[in-house]
Image 1 (cartoon, rainbow, N blue to C red):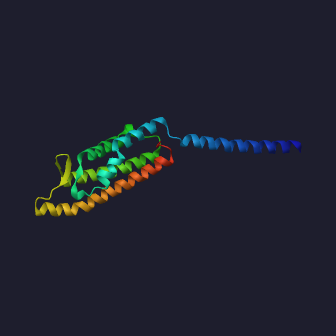
Image 2 (image 1 turned 135 degrees about the vertical axis):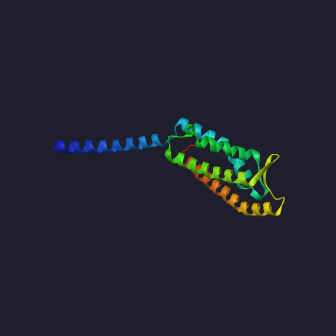
Length: 166
């Protein structure tokens, strides 16, 4: 009888210890790895979130875009698509690729609708045909930048929740 009581108490203690160690392991697994932190930091710096928001997302495509932020988005998509910039977090990789793909699509479309003029990419408006084309392309490009910005916000939310950002 006493043996059963002692064994029961030991089982309860072991279950408690097991539960505690599972929580510790889960916490350790959820912490970002140093390599992943470096990758995220480099991608964020490459994109330059502030410039992306002010010079691309908030900018109406009717007026064109500064070349420097566009170049940063191109560099970001190149890095994000590279195998060297894959993290050990599969969900994070998915969010990065979703953002990268939406920015890439915008850059591809804008590359067909805008031309280089000094330090800017501007839509052609010099004749009736180009003006009509620009009027049709403007809402499409604006929607693409909005979608990209939403994807960026989703990525940043994930990064904050998982302590990737300081």
